[in-house]
Amino acid sequence: MTIHGYPSAVSTLPADRVDFHLSSDAPGPHSLTIERVGEERALFTATGVMVGNHPLPADLSGNHAWPPIALSPGFRVPSSWPSGVYLLRVNGEAVFDFVVRAREPGRTSRVLLCIDHITPQTYIYDTVGGAGMYANPRATRVSFDRPLAPISTASKFSRLIPWLRDNGYPVEYASTVDLHTRTRLLESYECLLIGPHVEYWSRQMRDAVEGFIARGGNLISLSGNTAYRQVRFAGSRTLICYKNARADPHTELSETTVAFAQPPVHRPPNTMLGVGWTYGAWGGGAQAYTVHFPGHWVFAGMSSPIPAFMTYETDAAPFTMEEEGYPRVTTTEGNPLSTTVLASAEMHDWAKPGLATMTLTVRHGAVFSASTTDWIEHLNQPAIATITRNVLNRLRTRLPFEWVEVGHANNITAMTAWENKLYASDAANDLWSRHPVLADAPWRCIGHANEVTAMAADRGALYAVSRGNILWWRWPRDSDLDWSSIGSGAPGGTRALCASGGTLYAVASDGKLYSRPATRTASHGWHLVARGRLPATTAITALTSYNGVLYAATSTNRLLRTSFDFVEESLHWVDIHACAGARGLAAVGGMLFMAGRDNRLRWLDLHHREMDAQSGA
Picture 1 (cartoon, rainbow, N blue to C red):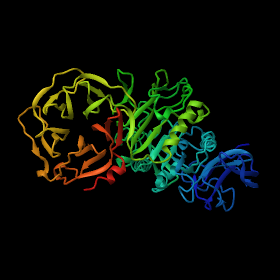
Picture 2 (picture 1 turned 60 degrees about the horizontal axis):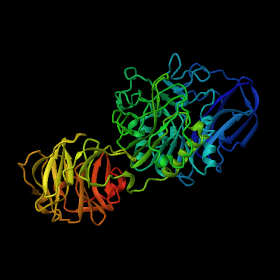
Picture 3 (picture 1 turned 90 degrees about the horizontal axis):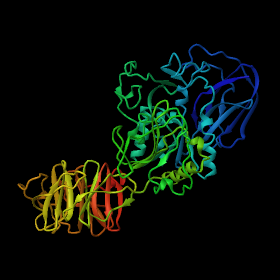
């Protein structure tokens, strides 16, 4: 006996009605039960429910009449039912699931587990529910008003949901369809949890999740092949995907149904997740992750190695391995520089050769990507369970606005950044470089520092002021080059130096701010900025800039910024945060780095909304 069916809604609220459309090749009375996934007990039972044999119509799209409703006048969700995934069984056999959302979102948990009901609609290969987007011929429109065979959604979460319960992580639930239809869905949550194979997204879903992250929400993706292709909805029950830009007749280019990374959409998943399937892999023998930063908090307490467990689909960030043996992300697929490649694997012999990278990306909110469709199925592995607990413990609530330690500061006396790299001088008069990865990476010695006391970089040159208030420059290359003198520093002595938009800025010994063109000649002098309207601040010890704004550290352990986005219009310094014992500041890729007197390197997120809140004139 075979039962087919579907619910009239994949997501509902307590006290709302859901219709169960069922068909059986053994018509007659049947027994229906509903259980909450993870509890394995019937919360609702109905016996003697008449289910007929209703052959599939030729066109299932939008056909709400097939098959007739099994329960009349439908099923009303009890108002006492908590948020969860609910599974309908007929005669003990699972048929389909639906989600019950929280009546009061965020009351029992600030973590939202989103159940994917979109991707399973595309992966239908047989005739039970009509053609899918991988069938031959391939469908370009598929409807939710048809059965899925075999059931695929709840079974994928049968391991995760009990694991969350047993490890003390309460969550609330929604469907990925809700990410598309409910614009305020994420407002009550601080963490969004997805997995294991959330491949198909609409533009509205991307907008909602990216906005959530930009406002400080965290995303935990225990998924692979994530957000790879774009779909459109016709209403809320029909999906459209052509997988080809020329075939898609839609005139809104941003909603063309192609892989997100492809034209005309040009929106690679890496910009949101830190990873994507372009560099990912598909189909092969089991592979294990190699951990690159074992001291990172993600791996805290991990007593056994990560096993070889990846076999199906993976995502990856493009990265290069530095000579010192650590990975740094590249921007080939739009990756933020704040993406840390925590672990990686190479699948050279898979059907689609590629990589897998476990990553953490922070841009106000944080995004952890497990980057494999196999992660959830292996939560019984100690290493995978430990990593998942560490990530949930850290990211289930919003990240605080604070300095985060990322490694050692190499006894730095001055620091700057140029073209996605940090440069610093030390007390031994050596010049060092390091990529701005958010982990404890080694520094590389690239020459002598010329007794530097303050540093800046602009238009392909490093500038520095040395003892005696002499201004110098050299090329930012990883080799020992001579410094060339180009005059003197700020009048009366230089306390701090930075560059912005072709201009050098210096805080003089009397606390006043001066500027001169960032040129490699001595033909320019220093001029008082903003006609002296910016108050002198003798406490400033380090200076840097980002997007036209100057940031300064003080001897009183405060972080300041100029009050306008154009330095010359600034009337005062704005106190925005603590900044204890800074010897050097440098900004790159939305990250503000600080080398402290305690010889530790820390960073502060310039994308954090608290930074915006403190930036008023």
